[in-house]
Length: 119
Image (cartoon, rainbow, N blue to C red; front, side, top):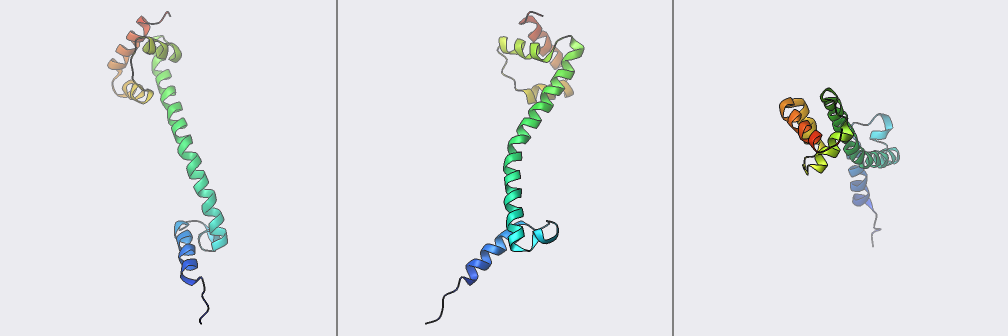
């Protein structure tokens, strides 16, 4: 009886990993053991950074809103407090976009926030 080997499964598994490491530098793209380690590390970074991206964008939006609030004589925290008390359900991404693209609408939001907060 012929000896069974792990030929095609092994090759397929290795090919799957090395195809995912295309574009890596040096041995990291084609030496299986090194490629496997590099892929594992890169997938870990990708998982982590999908979470970090959300934080980074939120920080960016807050910075933009804060910068847009200063000329209107109100701080970011007071602005958000005023919107919360006025029961405006607008997220920071939209407010940031308003501040950039439609300053008049943003000014109206600031006026609403000022009415509902003691400055």
